[in-house]
Image (cartoon, rainbow, N blue to C red; front, side, top):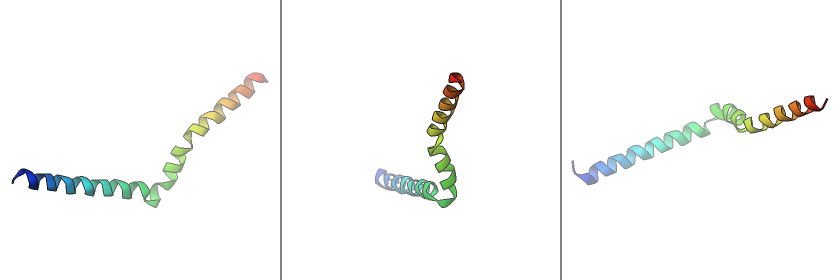
Length: 57
């Protein structure tokens, strides 16, 4: 097997892997998990605000 064929096979394997990851990421089953993860920074802000309110009281 020469270098051209090996490079072509590697390119196809990487492309198929990329398509698999994109399909997994945009699949509907993971939407709820991703939405929860996207809102994590805002949950920290709510905790900080509630702690400040408790300290002020």
